[in-house]
Length: 409
Image (cartoon, rainbow, N blue to C red; front, side, top):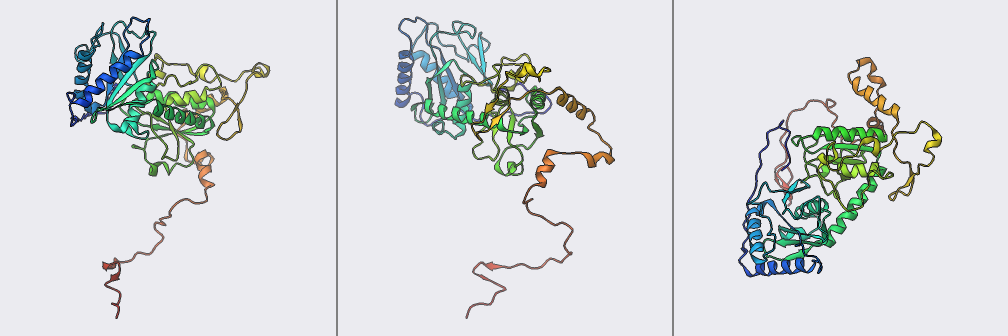
């Protein structure tokens, strides 16, 4: 669970789903045997170290997952034995990725990873095989946060049937989709910072960091609090080119296929803004879903000056800077550079957020100018422009023949 800020009361509700078939049934015994054979066959012949296996599950199947781990331990005895989370909640080392915690044996620490590939088993429902399902995105978030796991050694086990399914093809489709969204973020000029949480710790620091990065890049931004995202709410924001979702790791990776505005994570925004420099670039190997990893002291922290360098005072010193070609529009775009005058004016604008009424006519807003260029503003209620009238009795009856109509002869 994410660490909370303590400003809002939070109630955690966990379900408990019991599958129709238990682990003692024949399909699950076949699945256990198949998993052990696949994992052991991937082990290098000259290697004497055991193959690391990470087991994750849907929170509704916690009891079944514990039984599944015990069944693997009894089926395949290894040295050292797999670490049971029920027995060693505070064992070291602990691997924390994507908002989840994995308890490892001491021979498989994060500082000295094994030479061979890691394996992962996800215990969930059959919906994980569908690319657009919620269970599939839960598994995708875990895989994107674990570069140690080889995609060819990642499997999902259906809790209802015991079927073992590889997930390499599904994850490749997701990576292509996220790469497309990063390319869209490079072309975005008007960005909305979407508040997806008000209870996770350090969420305000993440919002401030995104605002400063957008200021350095010269992008227009606005902060939004709309609750749960849906198509109807985003239809009211046609001027925005992009949304950056600030949320916990379990809900930050959002599928925006049905939304009018693409939604990305703060890490994807930093990759888009710093794509022309070597300080921040994404190659598909690892994804940082927890925004706290991007803050100072985090595992993936990068200073703002390194992400978006300042404009050189000497014009000749910046002559080597190259541009970039958009893969969406095919147009040439310049790399984002920070202008000190823009930052100082932005800070001054925050300090003078309270203005007198006489100065309101001088305020210019890009959102207002874009709204004035619309050809249709939506339905006009024309409030106060109609005469007051008394209530009248409406029609009644079936649609084929109302009571006020004459009956056919």
